[in-house]
Image 1 (cartoon, rainbow, N blue to C red):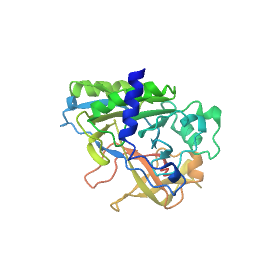
Image 2 (image 1 turned 45 degrees about the horizontal axis):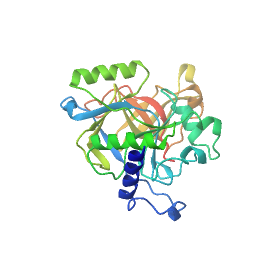
Image 3 (image 1 turned 90 degrees about the vertical axis):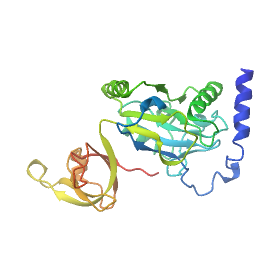
Image 4 (image 1 turned 30 degrees about the vertical axis):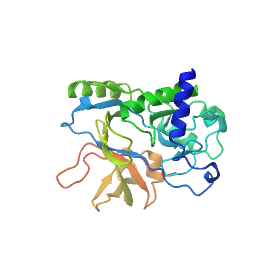
Length: 286
């Protein structure tokens, strides 16, 4: 235990310059710099990567004092949730369980946290912002930090290695069959990076993207009097429609024009239009 305390003390000292001063915690939030994933392609040598499950949660970064959303806003968690978090930066995902994203969103968006609800939430750590060493070394550091913290809901994402593409796809199939979303691949020799990089890759049986609602297409048949589809516009100006994935409640009260949503699709056509797009959710920036 003494060795673990010494390790954590050394880590905290190394990050002292990075951490914001406590007096700054109420300053207007700014979005923390984060590593963003590229999409996995078949020519990647997967033996050079660590592999983990892709959790469909809410991204959050702990700066040593405050837990913040991806957009920079403070996570309205109960004080006890982060009381014993370590004084070093962590990057991770707030998560409940597979296929529970909507329930999680309802919990973390509530300005007055409900203890009973937060007892379900875990903070799954997958990166150490600003830490030295390659990702393999940071995995060892994350495990040490979580062990010393002794907080049951502060957990390190399991990272494993696979030998080749066949083993990777077998792992993907097992995760998806169990209700998971996909996999993340993090290059073992990568230093800590921010921005979009192929040091981090995502692999799913489908793709997802964001687009803006620019119109509502009237419904027909059983959807008469409701919205039949959303007219969408991609960042490059390409327009397409989304009709799948819309509940009756959404068809009665569709997302307003100008709303940014996340949708799922299989691939792009030759004209760059999403094939088989399906509505997922409104994009939450917090």
